[in-house]
Each structure stands twice: as structure tokens, then as C-alpha cells.
Image (tube, rainbow, N blue to C red):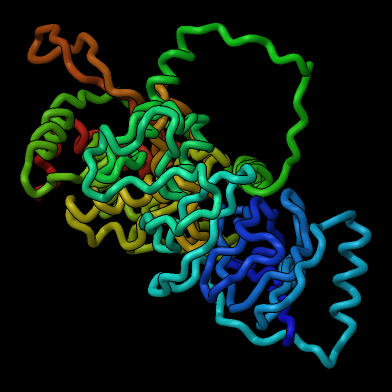
Length: 462
């Protein structure tokens, strides 16, 4: 029997450290290749690390909440099945002593595992054991692919049997019974503060779906908005500046104090955009695809970039790089902070392809699963502050870009049309530019072009 160490890998973009968020295994657990072992938070996103080894976990070398550098041993695996699990991780001094003792044995070099690229190969259907939170409580095994697997016979007599697959959703999960939900759904519920036990499941086997969680979260939000929350007992909270929050602070400060920002605003009659969105929602081609004014805004920016390519540039002190492609960034507010993933080669997409890409980007960001590669290489960004009820703002440029556009809320206002005051859907567009690259006339023409598409989406047909 030999033992292998798992070293924290660089999951992309030259990251140097990561925080251990949650262990998915414990000492003594069997693991398979590509089984998710640990959840880490880098400066850019939340990432699940798969195991390159098969065997039995013998020791967890770092604790949850600890930040470690790339290359640090974080757990060990014995390739035999008879390894005796080590005691749980203790004090930091003991961890360092154990790690040093392991590294000092040059003769026992760790086995070379599979190459890690973030999530591991999806083709392996290895399942992982879910430990019950309380003794005697049966757990529901969940396959690595996310599908619900049949429950193994539990030794405890009080275990709840798994509901039959053909049972109606309304009757599959009785009140007070076990909650059936896939791991991503459970994490979404945790991030949104939703108690799964009070959610009405609508899944085909009585499982809680994403829509069920979001519906419960929206209802809870409405309720909270009409309630006055109690002041907490603690007089203040102290939140460590690390991970995504630290990266946001560094990037925004660097952008604000290195690029001279200039901002422009324009009010736009978006009535025809709202009518166009409604027609798309009723179109058979867009069936099942989320359509919103953000889709038209994205297409408008791509169209305007083609006419004003300077806004799709970057500044390097030695030269200005004008890009003739659009990696369209979408600023996304997630439970772990602001991230800006981008849609690669957006200029080549049809309206339907762009709608699907926006939907996938949003779902991935909401789950905290956006890989670092999706946040690299952006060329211009949209921030949709209208979803928060804001009319407009002065957004800070995403580092490496020279243009960002803010879409404000769209609501009915009195508007003069052909000399008459009529109710129209009106929005305000705001945009910031790097004045080292983008002059006022170029910025104005670009924003006017975006506004013209929001006013008349038919211009996209030219």
C-alpha cells in the first residue's frame, strides 16, 4: 500500500492561492478518480476540485476557511482499501509538522495523478458517498453527474424509503419527509437563505427544482421588504478581505485610479424593444429560452461596436489594441460578490445563440461555478442595474477594457410622441469610457447607436 498527496493546483490564470471552502469527504472515505473532493474559492470564482487518485482518504491536511498557496498538500489518499484514517485536522502547528514530515521523505514521491483542469472529466459517472448529518439518518446517494441515484439499503430501521420514480410530484415527498434535491440545488438554496424543508417540490420524482428555490426566495424577499428586520445583537461584523471580495477591491481601485473615466447618459424610448421581447417570448424558435431586454441590449452593443470599434479596445501604455471581435462581459451579482464573465465571440452569434449564451452564463454565475477562463479576455461590458430598480449609474470600467454600458430600469413614463404626451416604456443608458482611448465624439456616437437600437430593434436587420 502506498500513499499519494494531492497538491493544490493552479485552476487557471496564474492564481497563487485559494481558500478551502468545504470538504466533500472525510478521513476513511473511499474516493474514485474525478470524484469531487473539495470546494475552493479563488480570487475569481468557486471551483470544485476532482481527485486524480483512487483509494481511501487518509488525512485532510488543511481546515475549512484556511487560505493556502498553490502547490500546498491538502489531503492524502492511500491506494489500498485498508488504510487507517488519521484523526481529524488539529492545530495549525500539527498540520505543518505532518506536512513537513511527509515532504521530507524523498523516496516516497507522490504518484502522478490525472491532469486537473478545474472540474474534471464529465464522462466519469463516479458516485460519492453523502454522509448523514445526524447518526441514524439515512442519506440519499447522489451521482457525480448530478442525477439522483437509488438509495442503498440503510442499516437504520427508521430510514425513509426512496420515493418511486413514477409517483406524482405532489405526493412524492410527504410533509416532514426527506427533501430530495440535487447538490447544485441545495447550494443555491443555501446561498439564497432558503429552507428546503418548506419548499413545495415540483420535480418529476418529488424533487426540489431550481425554479422551486427561486420562487421561494422571491416570495421571502417580498415578505422581507415589508418587514422591519431586528437589529443584530452584535454591534459590528468583521469580514475578512479575501477571495472574490479582495479581487474585486483590487481590480476596481486599479481601474478607477489608472483609467481617467468619462461618463455619458441618454434617455431612451424602449417601447419597441419591449414589444420585440414579447414577440420573441411567443416565438416557437425561442421556446424555453429566457428572453429579456438585456438580450436586445447585448445585440445593440455588438452592432454599435462594429460602427465604433475604438470602444472595443485596450490600453497598454505603449499601444492601443483595437479588437475586431467581441467578448461581451456581463456583470453578475452573485452570493460571493460581483463577477464579470464574458460571452466569447459574441459578434458571430445569432439572436437565438446569444440568448442561450446569456441564459447559461447567468445560471452558471448564480451557482458560483463560473470558471476563471470565462472571466478572462473580455473586451466590453454590460451592467444591468435596472434589475435592482436603478435608473442609471456611473459604472467603473472592467480592468483591461475601455468601455462599459449600464442598462437602467425600464418603466412607463410620459413621453412626447408626434407632439402628444403618451405613456411609453423609457429607460436611461449610462456609459463610462477610458478617456485615454475614447474621445468624447466617439463615446457619444457609440452610445447614440446603442440607443437607436433600443428605440428601433428593426435596425438590427440592416
